[in-house]
Length: 320
Image (cartoon, rainbow, N blue to C red):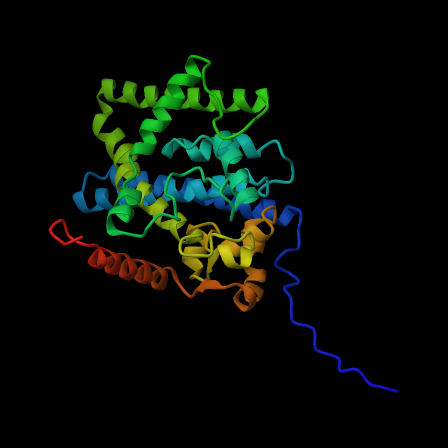
């Protein structure tokens, strides 16, 4: 008899891709995050309204960070992994996105397409920064202060009131189209409310409680949260272990980004409640190609690479 050599089976991830439904405990965890949003919002507003310059500045920073955090909570609502029932996800998601004018239903459609087409030419995220473009200081600054997005929102609002809004990246149902238009119209009412407050003599409060936090803090902070997800990963594959990045992070960063740091885990099983992704991270660290220890190590690497790219670019007087 001849004996055959049995080769050991290569290890494979067993937990990362497992699906899981939202439990009552998961819902309670999300509700706790919403309560904390209210507490921090009240604290930020109280700091702003003290009238002290230092306290006011701190309040603007707190509120700006909070509005960016709320979009990450909205992201969980997009995936219907926050509540036991489907119903609450949209109204809660709409409210969470209002300070930064992020339409929940439009975001949901584009974002689910992003999950479906990641690693292909059809991939397109809701927010405009293309992580496949050359990494330069100019591109980073444009992403940090992407105020053009608000002009795009204004166009969507105008088209919604005229009943002319159309989804430009595929076919959606009439019901979803109506939902998107209704949310853009709601943004008009929100803006009108802020305008009415200004007319009534509350201009300073509107600026400090909403406008400046969004423009000076929320917009760049949201960009910094989203940037690590796929940039400088393998964009020519649909393998989530190669085209997505996870960051171990600290307890604060895991809360502040609402688990967005565990992005490989999220793309591998997008309906798993965010608070349950941590238990999968050890396996991701073993099998995924792009895993960072902290956000700071990632940002340092990005800045270094962008700086080197700028130095390599020929100047206007260089010989061709």
